[in-house]
Length: 340
Ligand code: PHE
Image 1 (cartoon, helix red, strand yellow):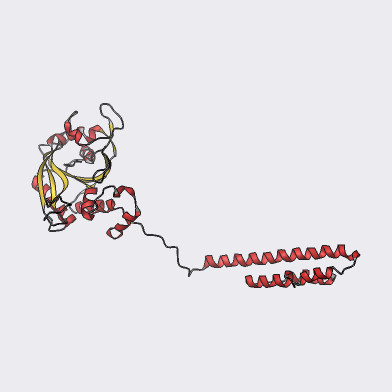
Image 2: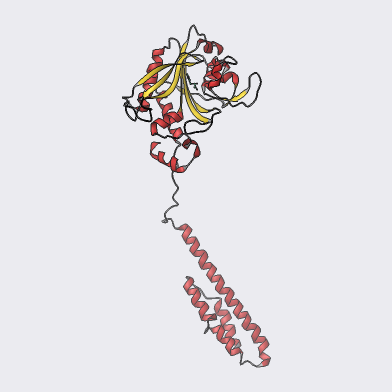
């Protein structure tokens, strides 16, 4: 029996297995019901009392070693199969869902692109502004009722309070202060107005405003630029019309309508059966505004216009509720995959 134990002890060191099944076969062969080690325990019952102590120890040692060895073989095989999986270059990759541009970014880029063809460059400015750049320099005298047109968020109070800009015209003021004509810029950006959130209004939205100042810039130039924009944006057969309006910083001022692209002017509920959709405000820059920023109003004239990006996007895709643009619901955003 002693010899048998010694033999098995040296044998197990040389056992090898290629897969899990072979490890299991070795286990059965040694430690299974009829396994060689199990059988030795049977033989052990017949051993004489003097030998029991020594052989018992040896036998237990053999059983423990065999168990350890089998476990080691099993671990080796598991490790091998893991390595093989991570190295299998033929496995298909993890699919990554493709992101989409936000619909407002798509429309903003489209508008910028159209005006780039007319020689406009993009100008940006701070969203947190002082009262002077948002109102003062734009011919809004203090206490002027026109300030009520735009419900302002105040950050500080005082003579020239810090506010959140209510329109991107403030960027035009900064451009007029720092550049000499000719100036031809468009100013895209986020603006803030203290309004109750509904399907048609939000306290945050986006505008693009344009400004063109040079010698001999006329109302006809403005009209033609806006017509060009409308045709590029809504299609070659779109009609435009100008209605008189009022802004403190332009004189004369107008509002631009385009023919409804849904009913083609026949009347539907999007255009409220008028056949027209309002898209922007515009006008000739008031001489007071030019002078306030140090531009000679006898030598230079200019026009400005401003539109809401949400409004253009709504008309483009007939999105009826403005809140969709801010809720980041991927089911909504995913629909613009092909529009990029
Ligand atoms: N700033 C105006 C607004 O936010 C829009 C506008 C811009 C009107 C330029 C005329 C000229 O309502």
